[in-house]
Structures are given as C-alpha cells and as structure tokens.
Length: 292
Image (tube, one colour):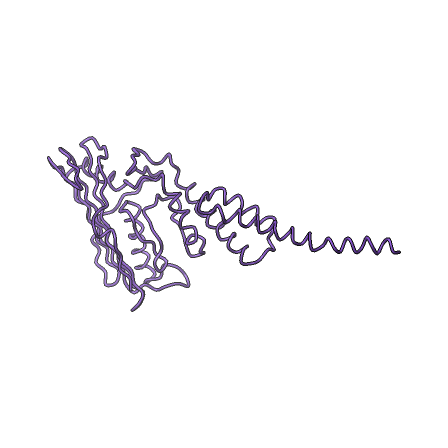
C-alpha cells in the first residue's frame, strides 16, 4: 500500500511540470506565428496554421489574433490566384498592360439623372487612336509588389467587410460605405462605377440588402488621346507620340454625414506602334479624397 502511495505522489508531483511544459509549448508556437508576420508572411501562415491546429483551445485572445492573420492570408491568396501574372504583358518596373480574358469596352454615355447622373466621354479621331486609348486604359502599376502591399494591410483584410475585387488587377483601394475607392484609372474602374450607377437607378439607391441607401451619386469620366510632335512631363521628353489623358471623378452620398468622393487622373504616353513609353500618376488630385 505504501508503495502505491509513493507512486501516486510522484505522478501528482509531475503534473505541474507537464502543465508548464504545455504552456511553454503553446507560447512558443504562438510567438513563432506572430514573430514572422512582418518578416515572412508565408512562413507566418505555416506557423499560425500549425498553432491553430495544435492549440485551438488556447487563450481566446491569442487564437483570435492568429486566426485573423490566417483568414486575411487566405483571402489575399485567393485574390492573387484570380489575377494570373501571365495576363500582364509589356511589364516594366513602373507599369504593365493587363490583358483581360474577356475584354470589356467603356461605353460613351451622357445620361442625366436627378440622383445618379453618368457622363462618359472618350475623345479620339480614328479607329487606330481608339485602340491606343483602350490600351492606355489597360495600363496598371507593375503588379510585382501587390502581394507585399496587400499583406502589409492584412489586419484590414481580416475584417469580414473588407472585400477584394477578385479577377481584376488592383485598380481599387479600400471600401467607403461598401463602395471601393480608386487608385489607378482603368477600364475596370470606370465600368465598376458605371455598373453601380445603373444599379442605383434600378434599385433606387440600394446596392446590397440590409445596407446603405445612397441618396445620390455622380460618375464622370473624360478620356482623350492626341498625337503630338513633342511632349514633356516630370522631366521626361518624348517626340512623335500619342498622349492619353484619363480623368475619373466619382461621388456618393448616403446621408448628411455619409459621403465620399474623389478625382483620379492617369496619363499614358504611347509610340505610334502602341508601345507604352510612360505612365504618370502625379496629378495632385490623386492624393486626396473627400468624406463627410
């Protein structure tokens, strides 16, 4: 009897040590996860997934934080997979042309409306110039750093309301009252606001169920392309080129203190054969939005 009592006491004495080892293991797994989020998000995803699989019942605050990162990482990964790198052509360090699998055209529209007016003008002088303008509207920032930029904002993308525009290169920025902002003027950007404006007209300002009712919106897009003998911009000189100038203006109002709007400009310089020679996003309007 005394023998069994000694064994039991020894086993009980070992319980605190085992519990401490388990706590240490949990902490080590958690800090492996969080310690790599800024340094190496891909490695962090592996570590965080391992931590969540092994210790789903750890401190709820720690589990929630790790789970937020994993959620954001998966959302960003799905988005990147939806925009294949092979669809980008004529890549340079500054820009790339996106070749959409199903190209869409921007319509010419002058459609007044009491609440949701749409004005879209595209000025060109020939079918050849129209093609060059359409190409200029397909020029984006170089996509090589998009993954890094998105993962830096993982905390935002972890939110349920933070959506991404799957299947479209990143012309878009964060959402304002459920509607995306614009970083770069492109075909996809113009069509996005065009479709929203049409939806507002049909549904009287309701874009999604159980969300804001937009009292008004305004879409204005002006694009032109002209051939010039000489052109200078931001210290760069060009001769015998086409200059495409695109300006997108959007506003939305869903109440007295619920509104958002911006103007964005993009200038693209092309050779007569269609080679992209330069993209400029340096207009001051690109640096601000208005909100109420």
